[in-house]
Image (cartoon, rainbow, N blue to C red; front, side):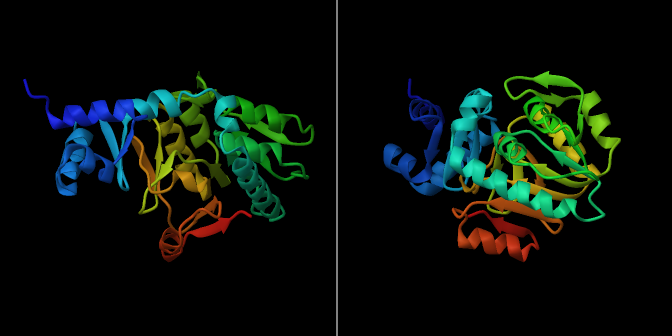
Length: 264
């Protein structure tokens, strides 16, 4: 019995790390790029893959490999870039904290934001820091003069984030002047994505409760999608990233009135 091409594409992706691009698939199966794009659309409709610029990624690969990697393992990936972005985010907070309008700041989960927390080492006498992540809260609480609030709720592994009804309600009980969040992916139109639904509610609560959002994400996250779309970068948002951002994407964000900071 002849095996469907969509099934062959899935098998090909499983043997090639869960990711494939359109050009490679055209060469592999001897069909046009329009045909491959239709196949990928079918697979996305069936919740088998996530399409992104130039190709697709297996949903199984996204959920079981990237998101489930131990925290320390993810921390060691692109460590120099994460520390650079973390420093830029910490410096942004330092400048903001001087303003009388900086009373409450949210720092979300993620290894880049953990790197940010490690590099906050200045007075924050008028600012309360709030986080949903155990690792970030431990770093912040090591400063005896800081006021740190840790969001409660169900802790999920391996990231040790607080999620669920309790966490979301607690977040919504606050009003944040600034919120620093990470992103699993950002597509070509500036839409921000997360890995799974269970964390999406926490992110949504943060977005609803914050006056200004700062997204800290390295350029390897760009032109990609994952399973859960959260929001779009727009006016009132700041993106802190590295020099790998393309000029076209940079100009798209600036046109949308996003404040883009490129860390050295």
